[in-house]
Length: 367
Image (cartoon, rainbow, N blue to C red; front, side, top):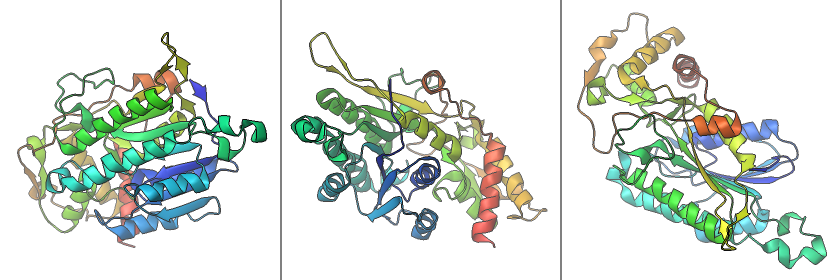
């Protein structure tokens, strides 16, 4: 593994106004020295844009430059690389959501496939550039430097309907059950290809059900909260028998930060060609929660925070329904590789995380 310092670097974060992206930028601004962070986000209306704008407002700092643009726009991506010469790239921009991929597949091909291709192409055009100007600059200036590490978001959705649990990165993931999952698996294949052909250090991160304050409104915990507050009935899929490996946002960001600092090492094989400097890790708590238990804890924390009244009749507002197309009954992360290589396993409990979310929700929507 090649150790990388995040100080005195230029870091590109795509999807910077998103849930994970904005939290990552905030952490980088707080914990790095003399680091320039470039963020790009198309600010689409998949969910409430004002929430994205609120996240961005908290990131205003001299070291952060935000670009409203789309990674599916190749000239825009190329312009960023030509102007800023990022040494570390974190690709979090993607069209998310399993069910929405059934309703609007075009968005997934544009962002998740074409957009990621544009990022890979931009990275590969930096490789080897230090050789051409080594005499003049000794290969040390930012303009000469190739991308040191590409970190990109994959998803636990790639495991599809795998029966073996916990899910390991050694498992076969050739049977996706949604277009979203198929695009994320494709990202891993594309990154491996570019890593092999152009010696780009690349690491994919399979995130497991990320949640927390200022999260995505399309996620179950957020949608449940909105419906309970309106007195509507929430639907609990697979008759409550789904289990999810929920991962709190701070744990996700800690995992990303650690992985950013450890790029797969460049090596040459017996054939004289590069061995792909490529890796994939799960980031999940390794403690899947039953969906019924999850909504019970959520309701308790919403009452505690004052979002719901203390006499709220929760039982009258829930309905057990069948599994939805594209969904899976269980997600369960084997994160031993992350612990082995980076000394980190997510630790924040579901109750701690949902308490933080409930308190944020009260302050953001009801103050």
